[in-house]
Length: 364
Image (cartoon, rainbow, N blue to C red; front, side, top):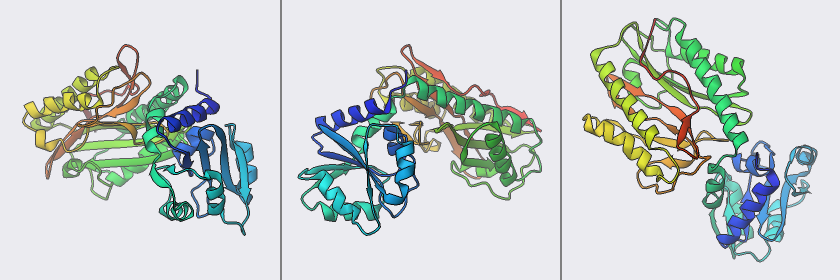
């Protein structure tokens, strides 16, 4: 069953109390959507949710946005409007009261943080992610279903784009086609498209440009959208017309690393152990210094969120956690390979939400 917003607020208030926080302040962000269902644009006018242990939650909004807030908010909060002639930061001061430990959401604008700090000179400030990150990391069944739906759209977009001719097409054109497909398939938003061909495949965050894709090129496609509020993120590497011996060898290593990491993902395992499983395969193959990023990141309302699969993260995996597994090898000036799936931890182990083939596809 999905966790209702009221319970999410209660869990946040309880976590705040355990952390000895007096107030958690959340401005427009995925955190606000998670807690209330309200998703206003971040503007210079302050919108701010105050979660206070033992007291009702308050959502401070500009007067002109009160109708939208009151019709959209799904959580039991008191909506308090402020007018253009009022100082919303003075209202924050009154809401926080004598509280001395205040947590601010990670996406809060600096201009708002600084004015809140001036309004509360007696308070110390912490990042709200210390309590909201672990809460959001464990998805309820409805959230996992939404992530799975987004993953299906990404799988289908990959399948359709690789059934078309890519040789003699530019990276930018392929990125544009992926964007069209993601929207056509049901995403309300395309969050990013990375298309790197030939030597550009060695740049993990390459921006698609005017390079024309050629025969024997590796092409890394990493893209995602948002469906029903939840994100997709998939990466596949293909070869144009034929694959070089080097590309096949590197792709086999990355695929084995991805498979080994997937096998390591299960309840009770430290997040860093999944990273270690992938990294061990790549290091043993002699490419350890060419795997230059973490193995994965959590995903949900945002493309990147807790938990992160990286050395030093000893967080124990729990059922409901969803994250990418995306090892890669990057050889500057020659090629790059990355394979990425979104994975959900289950009671028994883990399951892939992406179903697209992880074989090295040969594309015309």
